[in-house]
Length: 166
Image 1 (spheres, helix red, strand yellow):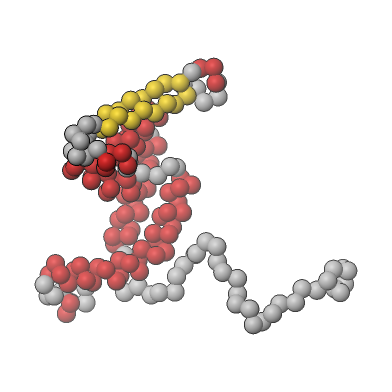
Image 2 (tube, helix red, strand yellow):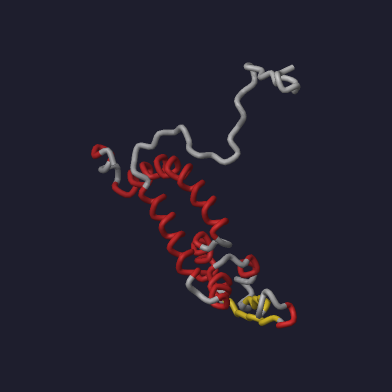
């Protein structure tokens, strides 16, 4: 028993230390400046700031148009456009105000459908969605960029950049 009457807690030194729930850093050193990772983070923050300046109806349109809608993928061969309907309350604090409906026809052209695989990476549900995603990208993205960029740069330059240490 301790002085305050509570039982003492014994710590078993053979147990591993508790694991981190939210990683703050990694132990892998990087050999290059992670330019691509920083560019992606800046682009994501810029898109989020830009979306914050839009009215809610425009944000809905942008998210429908540039977000990933799985039905579009299944409609590529049919030639039929995909119709997306979104209902939003006119006044979120007054349930009697009714709802406004947004209907968008999305094109079925393969180039526009596959484009959304790229553009969806820059759309987030809010700051509490963006911040942890960008933090994980910052913590782990430099390792991926470090291991992949050398291979990509080597292939693009035919191996001529290797002696430069790039």
